[in-house]
Image (spheres, rainbow, N blue to C red):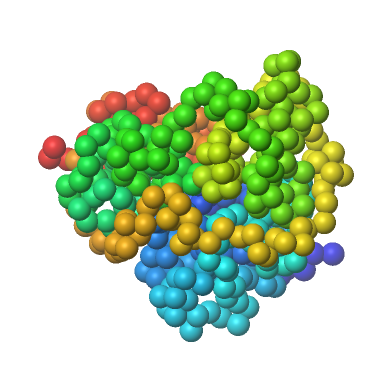
Length: 456
């Protein structure tokens, strides 16, 4: 029988879920999955992910240092909602400033987990294992073992949503070939060019941007591209930097060179973080599949499916400088197209015990930075920049990483204010609304809604 307290708690929980959805919150850690969907669970543990694995990015550190109270309040709200008795804030050991700032402020039900300075310590599979000793089932989610993982910026947004404030800004770091690296809280839809103007002069010819981090980010050459709710960093590099060249290598080249040069040394597999956790991923066998005469091997190719695309195999492990990561990505695409995708149960049946050498094979962050050719940038900080001015124009995307494309609610000529809802997904579809990040006039409505600031 429901008590009045049970009914009240249920009402509060439903209200929080609705507020989170209406605020337009998606995961700020990169994937962009709608937060209200992830909240639909019961879990014993909530992990706040502040590990921040990507080299040269500091946005999570400044979230924790400048929005501490909001982050902790967001954790408490989510813990109450999912029934978690344990909250854990994960930070890498090297981020001593964040640790010293946050540790004295933690309430009794939230503990600090100091992660090793290795990549990819912030991967949720790694976090869940390190913190709980349990492995997420292959092809599964943290909730399958009673855990919810959220990025620290997402938790700040959850608290803001509880106060009726939608997502209009994102935290990101600008680094690399710029005069003044910085980290700031910026309006969604601001162009890369406008963001880079805040960093002063670019110090190389033919610059490109790696959006999202040197390991898992993507190379962008169009500086008119707008930042989104999942933007975490803009790394400016010369077009011929080694990491850029590898990331932009065409698929046919990766496969042709891999077929000719892979000597099956197995280092890509032996250093793979998911393999070391016992999951059924073996990049060297995927590379061997390039030797088959058919379009793809129905046995060897299956070893690609559990790939997390972390890039350790390509950018760290391979002594021949081949590209197992991109080959695995292409093979995963083809597995789906040919209906060879394995079920989660099938993957789980292939899972092995955690590798006995796992703790000795983490990729040290400092050495990884040197391997990537980024050491000289790492010597410069990307300090907090309190940006008070607004861009003259924003172009806000209607296409999220997951879910339905939002439908415009405004038309050209409409006046909008910061926080106004300008688009929303169909009522019965998975997705979140989109909100204006500056006040002004709508000047374009297409796959992006463009807003021109008043007076410009």
